Structure formats: structure tokens, C-alpha cells
Length: 445
Image 1 (spheres, rainbow, N blue to C red):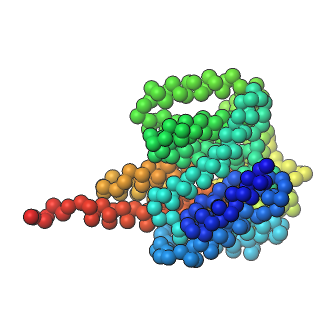
Image 2 (tube, one colour; image 1 turned 90 degrees about the horizontal axis):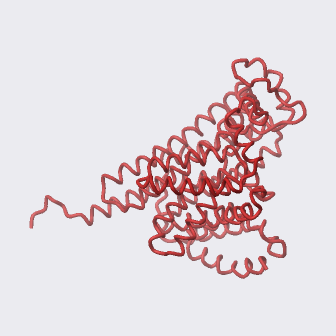
Image 3 (cartoon, rainbow, N blue to C red; image 1 turned 180 degrees about the vertical axis):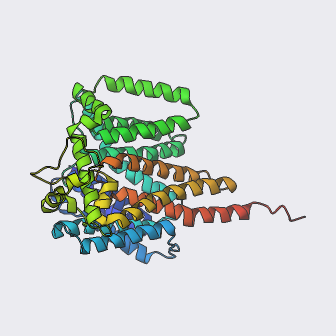
């Protein structure tokens, strides 16, 4: 049945993409995050939807007239420099070459999405359609899995699909946190216009929170608490927010298991938790890798190549100032870096990490500038609201990603692209339009 529904809708989707490049761009991110092949099992499962929609977006953009003016700003240039540096580190990498270039190829597609965001997005409709596609991908999956979790009395473990970019439950939890601000933006924009959408988005927000809990991801839970704390401090209705938090906490307390409570409680004694200290070991080895190859690092996934892991372990105790307690490197298999920061450090060296951090800092500064400039001019409220939304999503990524190997996530670079477009194309156009509509006080009639 799913196959028939998807195949029946496919011609209409392709037609819409051919007519409107922004539709293709939205469906591009939808397929990347939703993974439609994981939902169908018959004839429809043989189609490479992401490749198909990417190709249609490219063709539609080529036929598009007039095209928006393509402009590269500081943050966009940093992203391209970072990609160029990852290419160099892949060429000089010491890991398993097949795996290195496989990850490079995936990251190239992420950068392609970033570039098409810069090339196509030019107004509110485009931005919000992109948002809806994100919510109808990760948000839809969260709804389904959260309902299973509640129906099972908290015993259903929420995980991603095999073969999907969000297959790991920890990464899935961070993705859930990242789209919470997007849902809240859409609720603010569309809730007053439609009771049905308001109920649907409120339900999705609640189920996203439940889904984070259901993954049993400590990193995702910490990111959720950090994001929730920010929203609470900024909320103008703290009494209502307090009531909602209490209701949600009491409701979840009825379904979470003792296993979940025990796992979350390990956050308070991280230095005694074997799993967490194993991550600290991986961080230390990533630093050793970067110290041996300071410029380009070891290339994508070098740390996860056991010969590299084993060789780095020989110098493990020479970095005695890096505390790991009693934990030591595994002598049987390699492990991931388990941190976006140490992941980039080990993969691409200190230069790569500097570029990566510059992108993150540039993104936050761009969002801040959009809000500040918007206050000085009579521009539509949605522009600073989108900037704040994207800033919060990146905040969730930065906090949750501190303990995850998640540095090359599609949505992250799409968010960076949206902020670049908002700052370099949409905001200047809105300011120019505002000046046209505002009478010049120096003119006398």
C-alpha cells in the first residue's frame, strides 16, 4: 500500500519540482532526512529518490528565469574552504581509503545542498516550504516512534532506520532537538490561522520531546534541557511555561522505565561511567592524531580504522595531562570520535577545526546581525524570527553534538545556507522595500 501511494504521488511531485525549483530543494532535504526507501518494500523501494529529486532540482534551476543573484559571503566562503580542506585531508589521509572517500562523497552532496540553498531560496514562501519539508521528515518519524513509545509504556527503544543518515539513536535525538525551534516558528506563523495546524504542531512538539526521551540518548537529553532552559528564560509567559513543563514531566514520569532513569543518572557521575569515559579516550586519541598530523589530520574516519587506532594507542599515556581516569584504548576494535569537535580535529587537523569553528561562530554572528539590523528597519517580523529559529537549531546541534560524531549532518549546513541567504539576499531586499514604502521626512508638499 505504501508503495502504491508513493508511486501515485511521484509524478505530481516531479511536476511541481520541474515548475518550481524551491519545491525540488524542499523535497531534496525531505528525502535526505525522511529516507523514503526505508518505508517501502516493494517496487517503489528500487528508486533512488534523493538522487532523482536532486537531479530534478538541478534541471529546474537551470531552466529557471530569472535566477536569483548568487552571492558568497564570509560564512559561505568558510564552508567552501572547509570542504576544500576536507578534500585535501582525504588525499593525504591515513585511514582506509575506500571509507575515507565514501564519507567525502557524502559530504560533497551535503555541500551541493548548501550551494543550492544559496542559489534558490529568495523569499518567505521558499523558507517556510523548506521548514515544512523538514518537519514532515524528522518530525513525522518522531510522531510515529513517540506513539509507539507511549503505547509500550516506555519500553520501546526509539532508533533510526538501518542505512539512514540518522540511523544512530543519539544522532536521531539531536535531530529531534534541532527541529523543535522550527516547529515553534511554524506554530507562531500558522497556529493563529488554522486550528488544525495549531493542534498538529503542538502535538508534534510534545511528541518530539517524548521521542528524545525514548532514544535514551544522554547527549540528546542534555541538548533538550539546554534548549528548553533557553526558551524558558526568554518566554514572556513563564507561568504557562511552568505549568506545561510540570504536566509534561509528570506525564513522562509515568512511562519512563527504571533503566532510563539509571542511564540518565549516570550524567551526574560521568567520570565513573564506562561508556562516557570510553568517549573521553576517543577524544584523547583524536587529539594525538591531530598532534601527529597537525595540518590535515588523518582524513575522514581515520580514527575508526583499527591500525590507526592501535598505533595512536602507543602514545596514549604520553599525554598524561588529558584525564581519562582508569579508561584506556580498546585493544580489540576502534571507536568513533564521539564529538563533532574532536571528530573534525582528528579528521582534518587544527586547520580543519579552526575552519569548522569559524563556520559555527559565523553562523551565530550572522543570526545576531539579522535580528539587530531588523530592529533598526521596518522589515517583516518573520525575518528576525527565522534567524532566531535557525540560531536555536544550531545551538541544539552544538550542544548535542559535543558527544556525537555528527559534524557532517545535512541539516546543519542547510541551516547555515538559510542564514547566509537571509542575511545577504532577503534582508537587504526587505530593507530596500521598506525604504520605498516609508515617506522621506525631508520632502515637503
